[in-house]
Image (cartoon, rainbow, N blue to C red):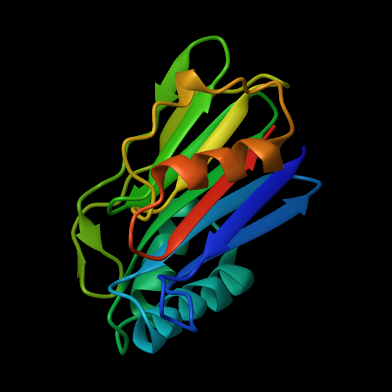
Length: 182
């Protein structure tokens, strides 16, 4: 699987409140996008705390991983998180908050996230299942990217070029992260 990630802090900030996590293992590939609440140093602390937690609990069930992150983020502003695990012909997805995640190929599937903030207001966490085929493109991004219609992009092109084009047209004044995988 080819994976490209572009992450940029809000203009004027030196620290990025967005983060990502990727782990490729024999039992599957795990992808996550994290957006610490707000921006700047405190948002950066929250997102990096979530990354450190995912490094420790990545092999767990996705719901359990998010609950572990919730406990770890209690002393921070909190974050929104989307985690996808690709195993064979299935994508498992658990998300809390406004991380956008979808799969394109054999149709377009938008992944479902639950309301809340990890570390602050976690009510219900669920894992949803989506079909996956080799060649499908997984897109995940933070709210630093808006009004993205992925059907306007030729997803057969280089993933980095696609990510750059998306950021140039859809980035808003916020920390911005896009993850593309094929």
